Image (cartoon, rainbow, N blue to C red):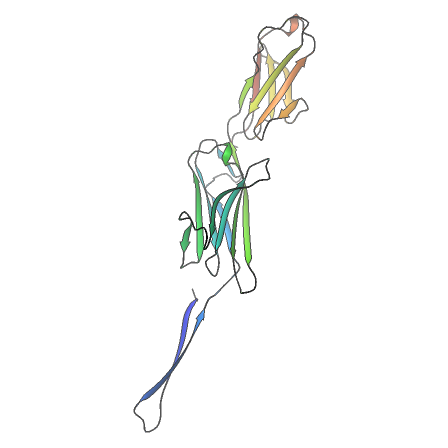
Length: 238
């Protein structure tokens, strides 16, 4: 608001002269400050969760006394330490038009919009910006938010076919859904045969969303015959 060119003008008239003398001095003033970053989203849940297949937007804004010369938004997937770049504004080198530059407010703004969310949209989003608040030091500021895409749980079971009496029986029950399934039940003829609470030693974490639990019978007899179903539960959104 107060940045700009300031000018001071002086006037006088010497005795016995009709000419008015003037003198001017000017100075350019730039109000600078450490860069500030805000990271906002359109999620209604305070848990930063969005339902699978729905839309969301994340807005990254950098505010500095001068227009920040650097703005980056990246995402680090859950279970990974490697960030993937979404957008990078780095003047004078890389200045994508998707980053809005406002010279009146000295801000950079980028809106990351997703129309149909999937597992590849979850993770930690980080907004980073830099400017020079004075001639000696480069300042940076970063904000991050953790983000989860959730969906109703889906179960599957291995195809058993026919098993000979006395042989080994192994049933694999897989549940997929985020938040991760908190309870998996293997039913035999409609009654619980085995139950796993998340996590369980008989279960393997396949990735952030999928668990595989194994029911093993070393030596089968006729009592092991029947119809097996895999049932799992989670909370898609509270």
